[in-house]
Image 1 (cartoon, rainbow, N blue to C red):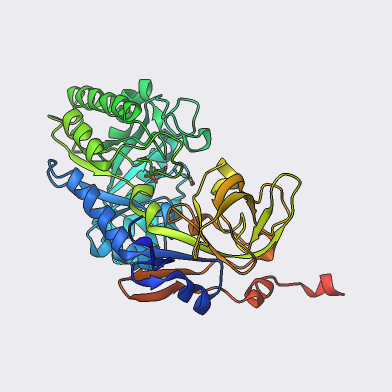
Image 2: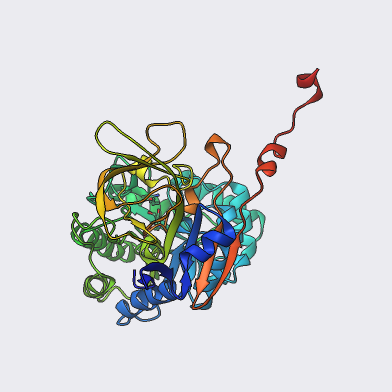
Length: 421
Ligand SMILES: Cc1ncc(COP(=O)(O)O)c(C=O)c1O
Ligand SMILES: N[C@@H](CCCC[NH3+])C(=O)O
């Protein structure tokens, strides 16, 4: 978090005081650091420097903001997309189609057509019916779709159940034991060009062991597929590397250790390796800035009521996720408090019994490590407008997504005359 730090006692993002952004844009507001994004891309890329021409496809779902994507595009990243919307955002941000991979269990024919029109690098298929549909769509356009099957290796990623994707009971991928049959069927589909294998076992992983187990299974499968006559040229190892949120939990492995493991395990595979990192690129490059509305006495601890809520940052209510909460101008004292938002749900709670900076009404607080799965998962529950987003670079900053006027929420509805009468 070195680009989010205290200068003369007040928190800055690079050279810009957070208070200046709050003053100009209002709160809550997401703030991203270009310097941190750049550093993370370089660290991740350096960790893979032993590999020849890896494709690093940023998982757009982690942060689809156009300015963030354009920053990553400039740094040479590709994109892993899971919808037509993400595909169009990636392309609009300058990510070339030949660096885009399309994941997801529910791609529609329309989304397939869009991706084929743009000429993306690879579709990661997740079922046989999907393969059949893609083949038909490609044929109808006179094309062949480049595909990999995402396999489900039945490996427990050891992360939160709601973000585990590699166990046999999860909806993702094709069962490992049936993979040879699925590939054989895909080879017979005239609209497909079967080029690879893909895997992604979950997110916020804090241990490399399950990743290594999954990759080892991919390596064994590549051998079997080649023996069966498939020309496997790519292997997509997904994303999943965790970032440090809570110092009381095991510290996630660094990209360097991940890169060493990947280099070792994939030796001799003779494929182009692909990666889909999300959180590790953007997580610590963002914070959610919020203002304390009031502090209310509680039975055990005071409730710090802030103007951000579960609709702005869903992770605590959805996964009991822990985000560090810091005063932007700390007074130098700490105490135990509960931090909650204004939404009418008990789940609108960011922290309970948290030892934190003492704050009072009007103070600014920053929710750290909010650059991944923050703004992208926001909604308008309780008729709250979507949170604006700001990108900082050195001493420059810009609003990269404006706060929509409340009126826009109301005007979005149309009331038919027969309801009014
Ligand atoms: C297919 C796929 N690729 C990549 C990612 C990115 O994961 P992470 O943000 O954990 O790196 C995800 C999300 O878990 C995913 O579902
Ligand atoms: N939304 C999740 C990550 C989901 C990963 C998507 N496959 C989180 O905030 O941790």
